[in-house]
Image (cartoon, rainbow, N blue to C red; front, side, top):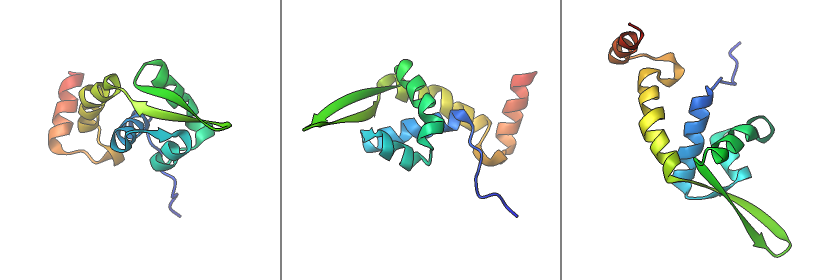
Length: 111
């Protein structure tokens, strides 16, 4: 029997959050976690950590009696995604499918 749940490294969760926010511009927490396929209680710490490191920013908007929290990606978050995460994913692609080129480059880094 195949397990339908797939493990996702933390680095890929961070990339998914940053790219989802950049695609939609801004999202509330529920929509963000839904689009990224994450569990709010399990992954809220990642969101807090991204905000602490200024990769994303939180804004609170008052609508009558309600306060809605909106998240947006910062330029620092986009730079981190392009300069750190994308090269990492080129070396270690999701799903364990390695191209010959990425395997050679990965081996070169360990020498």
